[in-house]
Length: 138
Figure 1 (cartoon, rainbow, N blue to C red):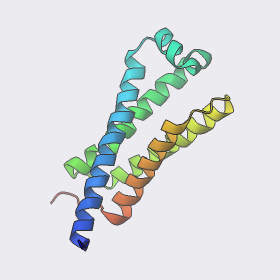
Figure 2: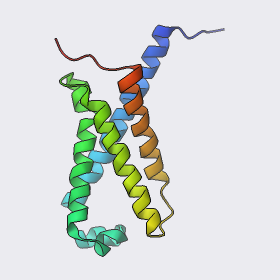
Figure 3: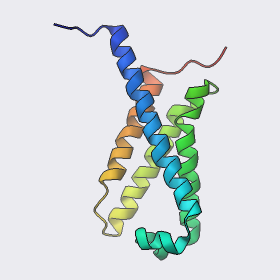
Figure 4: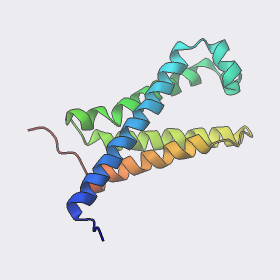
């Protein structure tokens, strides 16, 4: 029988955290850029809330998405201020909680993707703060 040593467990945890960070970066930064570069009318066909809310909401959430996506990966990857990574993940948690409340208040019940992003962001915040923090450079 194969046992998991603390070293193996740490490597698996670290791999899981890096994977989650990469997925969050793709999801948040990708969605943010997509929402910024796609014409508003075209977005409104795909996301009805875009046409029913002020443009500032779209642009603000897009910028926050991009910043959150960059923040969950870049500080850890460069080891420059890596303590910002769990904070950025908490920001992504706040974005998803807000998105879930917003969509449910509009009667939109398909929030599974938001819940999945919320869970990943919580995992990164907890993992990079408590279980496998990244040491700063030098």
